[in-house]
Length: 117
Image (cartoon, one colour):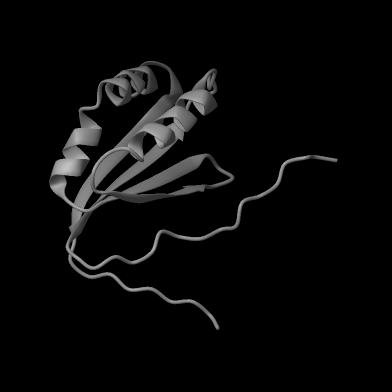
């Protein structure tokens, strides 16, 4: 029996537009050594970026991963993109952890939410 406790699944809230999203879609390699630790560190660091709003993750059983990061403005997104530790993680990702990835950056012009009562 596992001691692992699942966190409640809650998507990032719908913010008042405009804001920005970075959609990072990946297929990982088999060599994932140190990935979890680095990922946890990146999630810790990004919270200190001004304008950071949150992050959603999804992983398919087939190995496709999607991370959507939300930022109030393009400046916050740029600060995260160029953060020295994040840059090092990006380089390691290309060298070791990712078979392929795509990155889409978009300005959100409409946002809504729904929750069953």
